[in-house]
Length: 432
Image (cartoon, rainbow, N blue to C red; front, side, top):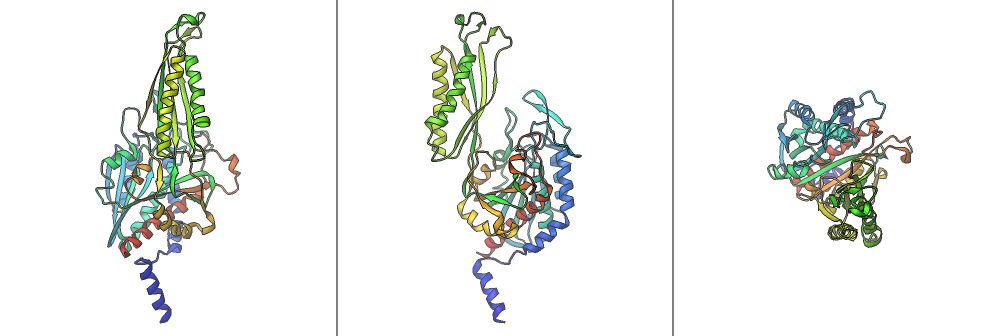
């Protein structure tokens, strides 16, 4: 009797209405693992680019409806929202998975490899889930099934966010998490907290990485148009060469990071990804266009780097008689893990995969538009291992590459994490 009373007292003082049975979640995830893998392979084989995830959205919505959930489609163009109302009163938590693929031609030798093509920037391209969003879809579909089976025990509401266009909406379109927030996916349901998971091809299966505070960088795209004066290639002095000016600007941009930015404070990256100009070997063109990306982890540093990019491009171009026009987009903010939320949910993560398999890591300069959700409500974004334990990390294909591959044994951990995070958050919320 004394032991029983002690247990009741501890549960009451912890602020929880019940203790999550992690072994039960693990067993339930194991029972549907084959189906989760099947869902992942289907989505992988039939990928769709940002804001074009029409069939992917239908596939997800059909599954959520089969579970008896309230389903909302065509959110932020092609996104899907599922709402699970528990059998007890309580808070509201959101679980998010992104659903879009990339303009990458798959090279991995898989029986379910993508053969799909699409249009990107006016060109026909291969389309591939080269960042693991297909695994995110499958894991969240699995978590929705697990949580639905526990509906009567859930103290509150779980909102499943299947988000399109994480990789960025096509030029001239809105999309992604920012548009979902704008359309009310958090405010309409009274969401109080959000959790997201990203698979990682260079972290072993069964391991989870996390970082409180700024976990992923802000991402901003820039365009620099260098305008000169067209001339014959045999007499460059008769014109103004925008190509040589552009080449100097590329070098100048790198000096902003290496010589003008306080890198002991936070990391920063400026990369030029494309340069286009000219049509013939003997014609100096009138203009050159370059596009690139800026990654920062500090808001003040970001503003300073923006100013220096404009100054560097403008002054270098002017020094050769050319003109530079610089445009920097709004981009994604820093993906911020609320420190209190991180501390509160860390025991859940450790209980799910084992304390020794959970690692505090440095921030990364990759970006995620989950940041728009995290700007609205306290959030936690985790990195889940998807690399075969037998593989050398240095040999594991990176994200956004044609050879990207995931060990599907990692998916069951993602299903458990989604479900356990939701249940533990709601149980804690309800007990306060």
